[in-house]
Length: 283
Ligand code: B12
Image (cartoon, rainbow, N blue to C red; front, side):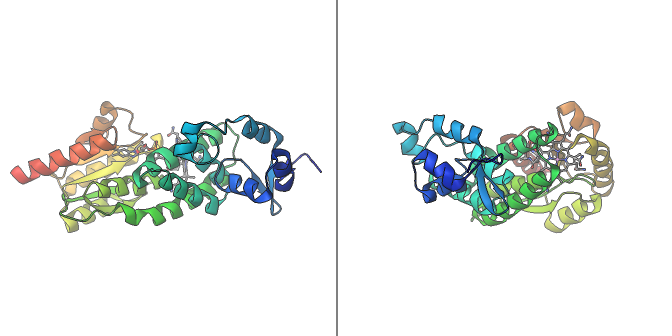
């Protein structure tokens, strides 16, 4: 029976003319959007129509992205995160890796766009904050599973501390950034979000770090960032401080919080770290 809540997966499979397990696989891979209600997967009529309309037989797509449709991994991840489907989210990661993606690209091209879209849908009133919290929990576990793949053997380029200032709770990005920097050969002390200046200073001293990197996501954290940078400078006047993140909109904003450098992106950050390490060595 088709009810207001959409179709059951058995009904959706019948309409698609596939076996139930095939429809289930579409759901777990994030290709067909479904939500679980009272223990049963439900597919909306609109979603079923969208899925049916999606091209499934283009050879180029099939070669690089699997049996059905174009692989928009970010979209698939978003679908699984919104559904609270931790197993499915991990399957999306595994499928992206199997299709040739790297762990770094899983962060930047699969997880990040999914989170950004979830944030936009929350801001538009389309998703409850609980969905965002649940998605955060799932992503935290994915990062935990992928993390070891970012450790690079060989000579270290040096040490660096990465964290976010007090009041700044956006820590997923700190974890991802830390892994990406680690993959480039740096030893990273990831002190996480909502960290006091004293933690930045202690971690930097203990590891003889060449710089501290402060991530700011929420615009309201700028004042706390400024206070944190002042305290770091007070304790360690020669320690370079790099700021970045969506809360630091420009070089001018970075300067206004007292940073030595603004980094607009990962490549930029890696170049900056090499520069500060070189100037520390030559000093
Ligand atoms: C998950 C999430 C949360 C989680 C955080 C969980 C966690 N442990 O991280 C929770 C639920 C706690 C949360 C809380 C809040 N959030 Co929130 N959140 C998000 C969400 C959906 C994803 C954040 C994320 O991880 N993104 C993925 C990262 C990888 O993307 P990114 O931030 O763009 O980062 C990129 C670059 O900026 C760069 N980068 C980041 N840092 C640095 C540093 C350096 C040095 C460099 C080089 C690069 C770099 O790396 C990334 C590469 O692509 C975003 C949506 C979004 N657009 O991101 C909203 C978002 C950031 N949140 C927002 C808001 C408003 C809030 C709250 C105020 C909501 C509330 N009313 O409670 C609180 C604030 C909490 C606080 N005081 O910090 C707004 C911020 C708007 C603004 N004007 O600043 C956003 C944009 C949602 C929206 N569309 O409105 N949030």
